[in-house]
Length: 614
Picture: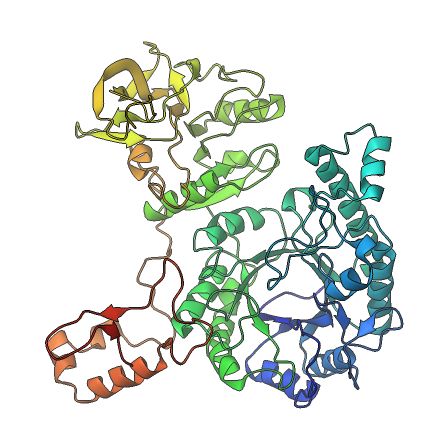
């Protein structure tokens, strides 16, 4: 299989009723646009989430009025230009089949097949424990046998419990409870994995295969590479990618960072985020030993937007110039952040990674299968309890001279609330029931925590790094008062953080990313109690001033006074203002959304209050 680089992921979810469908969509022009933008690999449309096929299928439903083999022509033209092609199938969504075959859909716990916002995508979903499975396998077989594609991409593979009769009977036959959502979910996972293995066999060993949406922990033997879907300016956020790429690059031979041109969400026609933002995503990929993939949505009549691919081309030329150094690069890290026995990346991993980035410490995410001995420090973030296998692995790591920083309930056994290894000499007095508490910092001040973990025992064999201080009150309602004001009382006599030889235990969950509405961000002060692990080299990371190819030399930039005197500055500023989205010009933004009102000017002499003019 080829080396993945400079990819584009083309969505093509097309509503019925477009009378001039594909009138201006020329596959040769599409492929040339990609080639001119230095795109080397593309994911193109076979079946969209509406359920329409874009090739002359004998099994599925071609898009109404489709007159040419769009998939076949696109594959042909791309291969002619040296661009690799993967064919896209949406699995979890197929609104045409859901409409025509209600018995193929997922039935929720309330007996509904349609639920939620019907103007979005996931208001009805398909169940693979129905004839839909064979229908879909037939279409995939058609494409694999008919076209010289490089791979198959399956999308929206989300495991959902189905309360339909067939699934309920299957769960009961296995000894489960058809009213228990956990039993239904476990059965659904079996069905999805069985289907995925069957597709993997159809695709064969020489093509790429991505089951997008299934947890990585259960697809290690199925996927051929890692693809991290993340629109950081949308609902994923900028804390999503760093932890997942730090894990994926230690699991898969190749990793793609699938960002997108969109400002907020997939399928956002007209949305194009700032070039600097898209460049940041691509540089984030290559600086983390991954390669960039930019998501787009093909216009159903006109094809690709040339202006978008001018931006993509400028960025991808920069990426291409660096490929002698970035292709095949391997990340080298000082610290390993441990992933638990379920191999799931959590908000605690997001917090730990953000903290390490702020401290300029290089890191990986690893599990018990990796070579832990190559890391100077292993972090156990917040809730990583140890089963026998993990305890034995960490015991070997410590015996080889490793060091551990553990927070919250990490380090405790899975079977009880005692620490799993003798190296934790500070010991446990059980779980901390507090809703708020305090710990002392080296400068003498106190800092609060709201994510309790374990009560550490005071032991002379362990060095006390921080004092635990109780609050006067816990956050509660007693029928008379809501206890919001909870100042620190006196030290409890227990440590809030302690060192026992090569092990440091912080008693509370110090690195978890807190949900919106609460104190956000990891508790950096808490990790600083343990000292900076002092990396061998300082990596570039988000927030560092990185000099990119083509950027002006910072030393050559005019001083502030010179910039003020520049007569063209006002014109450039006015031009930039015209490019900014205005609610009157941008129907997508609308007149304003709850929690995100449009900017307004105050009333004053000679003017009315109202929106700021363009």
